[in-house]
Image 1 (cartoon, helix red, strand yellow):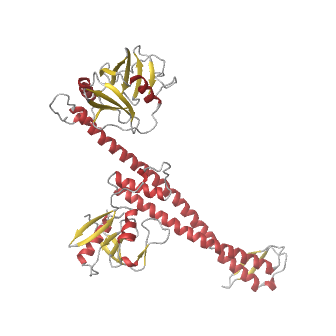
Image 2 (cartoon, one colour):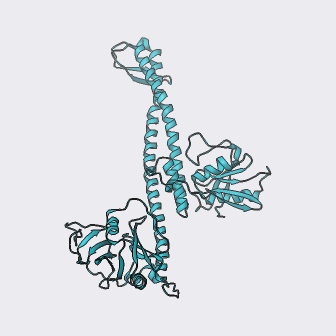
Image 3 (tube, helix red, strand yellow):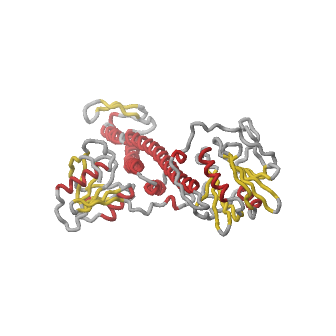
Length: 476
């Protein structure tokens, strides 16, 4: 809050709050708190949020509910301010510092809200300016300009300059309402900060998810590369088998005690085979066969692991596309749920924020009387392919890249017109990683030929049959 806006807000508060009784002190869902005040049969709720990115003070329309155990500062306010009456509220020294005076049973208190710099803070003092409680205590230290601890005398912060800085809200034309007791600037501030806080929360969630996907992708790629190297090593098992067969075929040429044997290979070229001198030629051959069997068994496991890793790579690519396409909080929560379900991020509290959003995981459009369904995420792709699709529906997807599954519903089992096929293909191209290309190869087939392998990542399928056409990416 800049000084201009803060002054307008506090001027309105100074006109309506004096004389109000403090009924409750409620901790907010973030680091802020609410003072629930009562005056002339009317409840007024004042938000004080020392959030360093959006410090603010203004009335709010909704009565807050408790969010659990309050912190020590809130408990201190409850102890000293509950039942008191607000005597005055104003700006201190023409700076972004608000002071609220309270009294109860002849005892006075001051609740001071500093919105200056990056150190927004709340303090409670007695009438002699001795600090009783601090929201963010500041113990002595090399980088501490002011020590703020209970028992110390309060000193205000150094005055800051505000020239050239005006908040987005202050730049806008304020809504004005007539009528006694109206608080139009507070109402405008509440609406603007709610919207801005929501936008910041969405941006923060998007950054967190993007970071989680980047880290998971890097780990998965390292794992894929390591497994590929193991496979390359294990594939040398055929050389072990060939060595064993050569030893048996040439055992009459080898004597026990040799460390190497140079033998003619099956292709006529000389082959040097390392031997255990303590073993006979047959025992050396059996040793090579045992190593071959072990490598062969390990190779099957490694190839299975490699296929799983490739599935995870494809899943994370799809999630990255979902993140880029996510238009709001609900879409991001759906992505977050997918990452939680696959174990890429944790949700120890098991909160509802980790659950899939209630909104449909797909979009549907009508084209020439045909219904076309487009997945909005990997989970949405899974839903339309495994839940919605019927055998005669037409299924489409951009070839070789992450993107949406597209379904043309065909309950009448008719031939899909060329124009509808082209429209669906353009949607599959647009809602894919190739949306910025001039043309994208799109695979299409009947839904009955689309299967999801057991245990595969969301959105992963195999096609028993397919055809391909080139499509120009185009939105709805």
